Amino acid sequence: MKNDKGKTIKLEFNQLSLWRAGTIIFAILFILSFFNGSNADDGSETIDLPTQAAAPKAQNPVDIKIGDAYFEGKKNAKVEIIEFSDFQCPFCARFYTETLGQIREKYIDTGKALLVYKHLPLPFHPEAQKAAEAAECAGNLGGNEAFFAMHDKIFDNQAVDIGVGALKRFAGEIGLDQSKFDSCLDNGDTVDKINAHLAEANKYGASGTPTFFINGVKVVGAQPYAVFEAAIESALK
Amino acid sequence: MKSTIKIFLRFRYILLLITTSFLFFSLSILPKNFDAIFSLSKRLSFAEYMKFIIALYKGSLTDAYLHSTVILIIISVLIGIVVSLITFKVIANSRLMGNISKSGAAGTFVGMLVPVCAPCGIGLLSLIGIGGVIAYLPYQGTELGILAILLLLYSIYSLSKSINGCASCRIELK
Image (tube, each protein chain N blue to C red):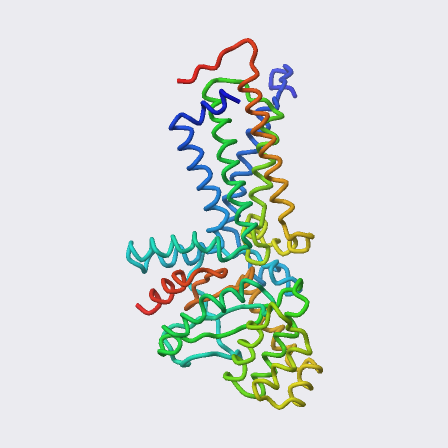
């Protein structure tokens, strides 16, 4: 290029400079990615792949309504734990086997906390959708108690068999009307409700399972009990 | 290799290795819980908050497949080694060879992408919302972890070779 006086200016970039510049740019983008987030209002990916939801930026507690989801504990408990989960997710099962029992004993059974279960069946878990429908069908027939009885049955048997045949057998084992349950499951009566939970997960940036909102504060993953204890205790203050 | 090993007998480079490795490991597992980390910092006492943070680190064992966590730890250590070796070369005013820094940068980049647990949202790809894509790979992202390890090992080998293979100069370790 030429400067004002018509002299030719030669710009040279050596390989080292380019690599340094590229590294700095990448580092900036990497740091920015921690604070970048979007939700459905920004036109991000829809519920076809729930895990596509971009991680939201650190934000004030979100207000997720219980809606028509099934719950365990006293409805007016001070702490509300909303769990987005997948019945075929091994980490959701890990939370169930290693942590939920302690949370139930210390907080749910004592009336301090309420656990609300919402569905986030992941597309690469082929049996998750029907398992979610089975739990909803159980809830439709027997309320919260039946829902969580089915919930526990499914997670107890996740490593064995949670196919449609097994789900129908679980319904009989927990004392539900077999023909009504089978009809509900076969007809997909609860698909719309599960899709609504998926949309909600996408909206609030539940980017994996399990994802929890403890009085609106997001906790992601099958974390040790101490993580939940800290979050619940802070919400109780 | 002797010169390379001697580098890590120096406290500053061990410290740099440990710090970089820890930082990379932390940046891989903590970001998905930034919301809780920031929110609870205002509400918990220091002791309670430290217990919470330590529990999050322990969560890297419960919230991921064991092999994924092992791969992440290996990548973190290798990145620490690469950074330490590059730092040594820069301090020693050695010329930073393009091919070596390329494989180190590539290995670091791939290592950052690695979703230790694709459904659980660890790794840069999960942070930017496309971690689910990795779940469709045959081994759910473990392949990327292995690739990152190989790139970083090559980078370390190349760096060590350049440090040890200089025929006409001596590297003074201060």
